[in-house]
Length: 102
Image (cartoon, rainbow, N blue to C red):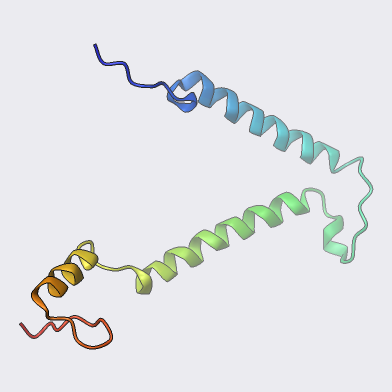
């Protein structure tokens, strides 16, 4: 008998509960946008749902920039393994660069 530990998010009912709570918070905060007085600095901040839209656009831009950065920051899957094997063979140059000539 294998008894793996059950975590909170392993149960679909708990995931649904958390999502419903988050959606309820979003709806509540969007509704409060009508009744709470805001000290605005720019006229576009007075738009209904501006902060929700601003946060969503910021999040989307963050994901898009991260995907773009991935193109030049990502390494091969065996990058560290190759470096380790090169170090074991003594093929690392000064400065930690692997000699790919072999």
